[in-house]
Length: 387
Image (tube, rainbow, N blue to C red; front, top):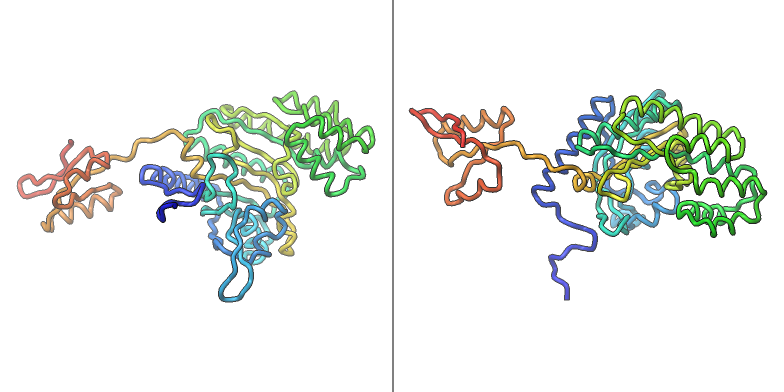
């Protein structure tokens, strides 16, 4: 018989030291985004299911918890990803003609964990640019992601670039139904050459050759050269390769500490992304810490199909990877009704200091904080003294 206080699988409390780190990261990312002109939005945790899943594909449906609204009887969903909600806000509530830079930070809930040690309740931060189709927007969101990781102390990350248009260009004109396409995408994602060859066998020779080439088109800058040699000479593919080269060149200049690579057969979010996609990996994690890219079709179901590009990450996962930083030092103070002491404490707190007022009988409480000073009374005045 399980104890009533045990939490569901892959759901966990966040205790003080880790919660402080997560909160510091949340503030850092929001401040960084605001400094780049991104406006904060706060979508609701619940929405009508049809709105929450509009245009997102089957995968998100499987990850979404459903429940019945006791007021209306309609089916609600607990968001598993905030991006569709932000697209709805851009399309219906803001309805701006020009560029909208939007960011968000809040919990999402997944029916299943994304990995063995992953939580089902990530704290998702994201930043998105709506209304600009040019690569300038793609570059801006990638640089924001890299700058945020640098601020979190992630050293020498690996940036993996790809483009959803490459696979679409390879398959252009081929007689591929939805079921076969899904199976091809799965085989490419798993780098399963035998399964891919079997699935591609009914296709024309140039399509088969292009799919086979994608299995090995991953690595450094040489990948783009090999791709031009081995993939079909189609305009969609050429444009995608040109844009990947443009982004990589600029990112290498502005972020020399980042190792830029390519995986042209990566199928992560194939049904979701419409162009350049990227993932950032950090030392100590086998999964990407940041994922993003261009998803120009996301607003179509809301009646406003316009360019969109962005990224998201789980701040809980990032907190587990980022180096621990020392907590700001605190000040210890005795508890007293002395108005002079209470005024001194208020003034210090207004200046941003952490002042721990020790309650009577709890002198050991200060051990939980890094107190390097204390308030002591000297000549009728309360002054700071180093510990």
